[in-house]
Picture 1 (cartoon, rainbow, N blue to C red):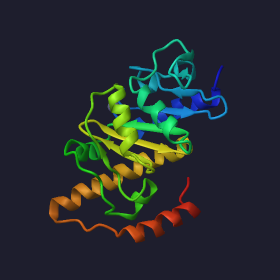
Picture 2 (cartoon, helix red, strand yellow):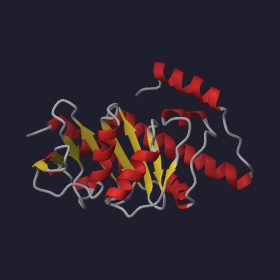
Picture 3 (tube, rainbow, N blue to C red):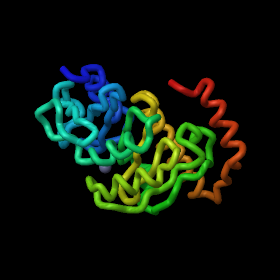
Length: 213
Ligand SMILES: [Zn+2]
């Protein structure tokens, strides 16, 4: 089976998406890019995570053509492929509709650095302008606004998180959700203060040493 290891990762982390509460039902999607072949293993469209098997995971080439698997790839395929095209450092992508990140996205509001853990994603998590789900327009919006960060909010939709591998992309999605909840709580009782850019540089440097899972 093509990309067997990557397909198993999609199955394992799909179950973790559910267990962690980052998604419900068939919401969200995940992919891993094999930089050697250029092939991408992506979760199938509309199949629940609990019953997904490695052979259900779809393998596509960089143009989105299915090279292995009998199911349809996730409807957000263009967003995953767009990010792999734009960012050679990214080899895994996690897309969720997690509640607190999406709450900010509903306000078309970026997530500022109110807690140091946002450093796993970057200096802040910007919010990409709205576009219809599953469109090239959404892919372009997300890929242009993410810049060199590892996460971007999608207005009125959810969150896109990226990493050098699946463990990192998933961790980024978890940390952004945690920081989004803190920001929501802080805003409920006051005006949150934001960590200075220079201090965020220091934090991100330190994460480089030990922050990786
Ligand atoms: Zn979505």
